[in-house]
Image 1 (cartoon, rainbow, N blue to C red):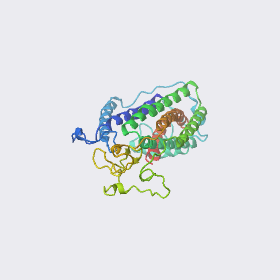
Image 2 (image 1 turned 90 degrees about the vertical axis):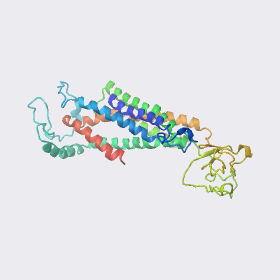
Image 3 (image 1 turned 30 degrees about the vertical axis):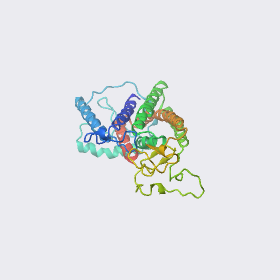
Image 4 (image 1 turned 60 degrees about the horizontal axis):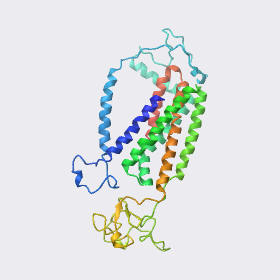
Length: 372
């Protein structure tokens, strides 16, 4: 539980680091940012996405130097306690010869004195033996499905928060790093603690994993009903002038911006003083760079101004707080299945193949989970 909690704690720090990087302009090294007429709150702002790669690459390099401090092999410690993990092994298990040196070795496990080629030859046999174990295969496939969900969330949840709740990129990353991921860390730790305190058997761990996954899935379904209503967008959801005439056509081009040569290939929304969102300042008919004198807005000319970003929807802040709370609960409950799943995995394989089974798990997580 502590191990996997630390593995998730890293992305939490990464999201917070990303929020600081996105507050720096992408070309801040080459230009004078004091001359920019946009801020991080502007939808046209592009943060320094490259800074995180450089910093994380440097941290990985220096931390890898510590790896050279490990010895070539770790000393063996004999454990007199016999675990009950044999209970879930397939009945047609291979016969193991009695150990000659006090260390039990599987006949499919390569001998440490064998050559590198001989060790490589036995890998297909060991892999086939693992994948022929139905419990092991089902656990691996379930883990792949879970990591696919997590990878999708990590890639698109920040952008979803930006578009759905009108947040900036840095704010979305900061909220993810400070709420959802720490809750997942807490869930992983609680899952490991429950397995230890309740002394769960392999079957008990399976029941626990199924229960928390069912509850977590029910929580995720509630996301379909949480969100903000799309406000009025001129030429897209409402006609220009925000009229509700039955014959009014929805077209982003209007007589008020026909001479502006506006382009629809980019979406840089602005919020007008009339409470309507426009696709860009150009589509709002603004005739100056300070976003004033916008001809397409309804109301007195002195109020014909816009500000960058979409117009806030009524009740959106309350919906966002509810969404954030549900997301934290989902993350915590779903993560509680992490430790029981690993416990089940290593109890369904021969004790000598535990480390290789974990290697196969992480390989398939990348091939079948993260990459798709």
